[in-house]
Image (tube, rainbow, N blue to C red; front, top):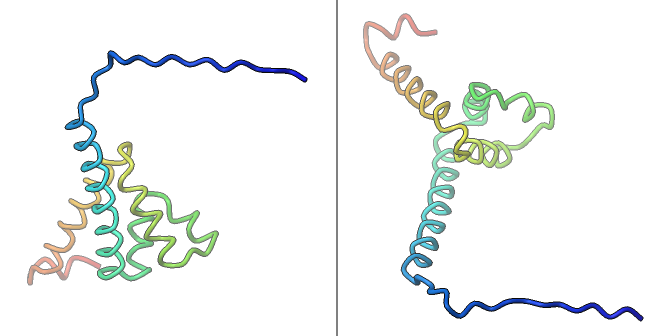
Length: 115
């Protein structure tokens, strides 16, 4: 029979900043609330076709179509993509371009130039 020793070190001199801990928890809850809010907004305001168009812009629609995902899978994939810090610039650009498209579609003169 082999006996293994486990050793550990306790440093009582470390001061913990409770305010920092609470702030981190608040940030975590805010992020979770933001994700949930995005899921709800996309679910209510967008059809599957519109969601897939957004995913296509990001270059992630192909995988969703191959696996034949349902709306909730598409929503989750989209929200995860948009909350990835590496994709922030792409998300900002997409939102700006979507805003411009909406403005053009709502203009009496310019809407005839949008397909």
